[in-house]
Image (tube, one colour):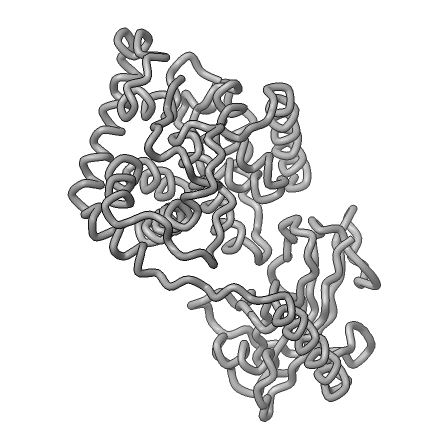
Length: 219
Length: 185
């Protein structure tokens, strides 16, 4: 894309004695300056790390045991059985995704309109989230079962107090990943920490808090 | 460009974390000495963190150590290191960005308005932002082209696709960048 040599070409000249581009390098101040920066980075590496120690550390990393086919089938079967049990015993309100008394509802924003999510959404959709109070709310996001990450309020920000049915002050922009995701709201009489909310969303005893999650299915 | 070294031309990119190391400490030490600076520099640039770069570097060399017998010998070692490091860093970036992000239209605007992007010091954030919405191959190509300043022929060599495919993917990347700008207006 430019007339100058790439880092790859400069690395090849410096490390393997490649001749391609060597003539250009000899007559180009900009490439010589970049080559000098790469050389300095090499020296910085040499001061930070001892290759022999890095090799020892790497070889000490334990191998992950390889599962046999039978073990894999057993694991999948167990996971399916556990999911079925969770579905049966989960409180009904945790499985509801819309409705008048829902704790959290998700809407799609497109073309200036906001419409409730009633099925799979575009993987890059802009979402608006409504949480029902009163109480202090934590909104969490999960891309993997059981792994809840705080979405709002952001770390270090004051607690979000919800009075009636309040909109999340931030629009959620999906990142284009095709996998389904989950969004959860935890609403408590006193402000919950993100860690407590994540535990509650993950199935811990909610106490006086209310919790609900919705699945965001992608098209 | 000749970037291979015979003594280490036996690895496979299809490394398995389940395998035990197949090379000894001395050989791995030499590989760290020869290629560690390249891998660490690239990882630090892409991940923007010394700590994560060190972890990524170890993962790269773990792959090297555990897949030593399977290398097909069809790619220069330096190219292979570039490709594997890029892939691993993209995995890490992808894992970090799984939750929704709020777009930074100004960074993307700088990307689409630059006539010679790499020459003007690549705006890493803009590239990463657009990349998050692209497929995996386009991500690799964008890193090599916009961030590494490689020519299309070099990108083709490193990622193993034709120059025509590289050109198409880059065009798609630029369209994606423009669409992000339109969406955020």
